[in-house]
Length: 78
Image (cartoon, rainbow, N blue to C red):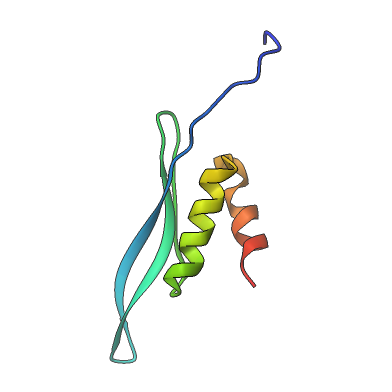
């Protein structure tokens, strides 16, 4: 290693999955990273779109490493 910090440009996206629960149609939202070297997806985070949109925005703003994504999600949710 040459002492230089490796720079990534992580771009997280909102995912949506339509489901039916107890006869009611709804959407479940998650987060996905389609990176050059890494891909990851976490489904079924919340049925509240604005909450997951805020999470996606935060992950993009702070360039959350995929290895820390689950910790960020657990800390983010109430």
